[in-house]
Length: 557
Image 1 (cartoon, rainbow, N blue to C red):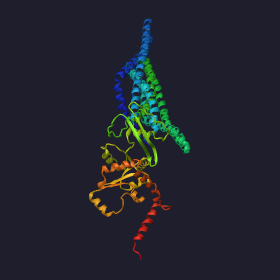
Image 2 (image 1 turned 90 degrees about the horizontal axis):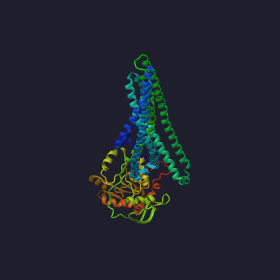
Image 3 (image 1 turned 180 degrees about the vertical axis):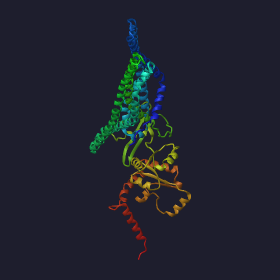
Image 4 (image 1 turned 90 degrees about the vertical axis):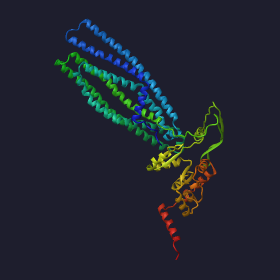
């Protein structure tokens, strides 16, 4: 089973940039409002510094106290009003962006070829449409706006500290090295950890969903213990994935929180020392210390939401990855004669003698809707594929790793793009799911026969090579499968017969429930018994055959 692709960091970043450009006006307005609110929040600490200076200088009059109090009240009111409108705008923006992301994702899901969905399994797609969408919703609606706001507040507060007293503000820098290196370490190892966590959710969801949907089959085939082991294994992987990310947070959070406390203590002690030596005023020391205390809140939110951003980024990569699936289904074919769908006496079988559809006839007129219901295996998907595509098939081309690039270049202009698979395991998997095969003469015909796959065989050599072979070989067939079963059940198209006009009808016959297909299936059913070696190993059996032939060929006497 394969998985749907996952976008890399560069692809997610490009997608986020395109999204931000579409909403740059609203985003700019939101940031301006939050910046104004942050500047209003800086005024109280500055006013308290003025209070302190006047009190120390015995210059604090009642009139000045009233004015400063009014400034405190107005700045607090301005902060509340600006924060309300900024937060309202950020929530609206978050809902708009999430709605667009959700619609684009659903459009990508609906465009997925059915074969891709079936190969990926239900769990991967199910987890992306549920837990990943939920994680992305939290990121877009809350994490991104809160993180941007905290970033703006941090920058403005740091600028205010420098404006009041650069000398006193230097002490707050003591917290930056541990925060920087701890965060760098966390970001380096947390991202793959969160991706592993999301993938473990997908695997667990798929196993549970498939077990629940196929509960009757699990009971009938007594597979309950096997499914239980699979679920326990998925839970174990999910547990270890979550423990990994939890460990990362347990290392990161304490370092960051300790750094905040270190910054406040360091600034308080340093600015106090400067004030005692009359380098700065007591009011400036008070203001800078309050700014350091104040900056801890947005820094803490940056740290807290960064964890949610990591989780959301991993989910967004999985959602964007769905749009990366290329639709390689053919776009060529006959032009429909009208808008009606007409099916007349259609039967279809995946194996000879086991029809899935039995003489189905129906007409669907424009505007009508058809609901196909029935138990599992009744042929609903088969009929749907036939109605949608005319013929339900996928072209799979097995090859070897060293030939992959050459094969890929050779088929790039084919009207029907094959799915290229590499290696023995992928080839055997393709054989197991194949309805028919088109093969060249060689050992692959015997492999296909052993896998019970009906086929058409062809071979075209150079002129000189063909002339030599025809005079050197006197066998009734060049197809190994035919030689083993003792009859020419596999049609072979050699040299001048290897042309599309002759190959296409033969392939149609072997795909359909035709006499030729039934004859091959019946012959291939005998091939295991024919090739059986008894208690001997294949090599010992081969040696006996060679010795027997040598004895027959040896001169008598």
